[in-house]
Length: 540
Image 1 (cartoon, one colour):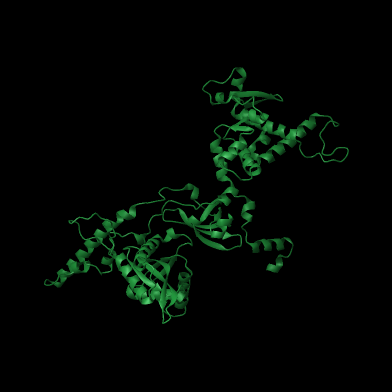
Image 2 (tube, helix red, strand yellow):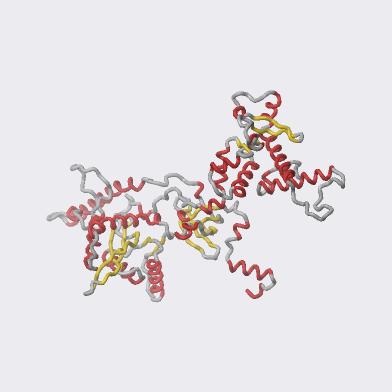
């Protein structure tokens, strides 16, 4: 059974004009039931003119009826106090000159104040009082923002438009919420989503219980450049790039030159790195075309031979998400700063540029891993060069002469363990710190089924037109918070994107069916259309 006043409940309608129109037709029907056949309001008059649309007085009457039900729910006590003598002096409505006006046997609470004698419209001199927590107020504000202001203006503009006929007690919170939840405004001005900084993976944290690992077993890789070089007798100019490998544990770096950005040049640089140090077990990088293509080429080569593939793997971060690869980004920044000082405006040869790359590599590997105040009583600062066995640490491990070989070996092992424990004690406190993104962001928690704005490309940013997508998969981090997603676009293409390139438009449980249907693939739409026409057998 439908409740008597359910048709006046604003939550049952999609918008304020829709609610006002439906209530107007219901009031017309109730009025016709009380009148005779000759005096009823009919859809057409004797001349055939269409009279089905509601007139302006009928719409105003429906609006006043909705306001009356709203005020009886929230301001019934205030209305009774005003009718018997007035509000207390400390009441918030007493400062606004609240009055009760009789409208068709209905008491409506309106405001007066000091502008009642101004040359204003009646609604502006005596606006209707509304409560901020009701669904009617929210739909009214949405109507003013979407239909009247056409999504233009900000908070003050919307507030002025509202106060022409209505007054909402504590309206700022309601107005901000409506502006914040407006889908069209969110589409026009999306922002990058952020989440609390993720815990470090196991490969980044040195442990006391572990032995000192071999450098570059887990590397973060990135490319920088280009730099112009000259070659040949004609001194022709060409471009060269820098490929940086950084150890995930020790922070040691290795510089290799890329002669171009092709897959072959990347594989040759990776081969030179392997011959200098070791074949990494894990290579982390962004989705550069030469990196992805090189990985695909290596996979294809190992499938074509009857040999066991070495235990290495590539892990690619999402596109346009540099914070997924932050360790390499900082190494690129430091290398560029040093190269800018060394090269200045010079155009070197290939040999000179390689020598400069290696010189900068040595400088970066000689930097202390932990910042310390200078004190003569402290031990020598630990640098990545110690892990590469190129620093003074090699002179302290083995005794110069004399002694039993087993004692020497035990002495070397003890010094190595002490060195590793000291490194762990100095570096772990620095890794513990959270420098930004310190708190969890509930508004940025995206899930499967959410409709998002994909922040890709400068052209969309200039024209304020961003593509929309539907999240089909959310990859959780070590703390359970998802920061990487699979997004299906309207064309059917599935993108791999980080949280910083997505902006929530509608949650999966609140997104309308019409909005979700926008992201169904075109082939599926066409297939459904053909099946509907009885031609589905063509697809089987």
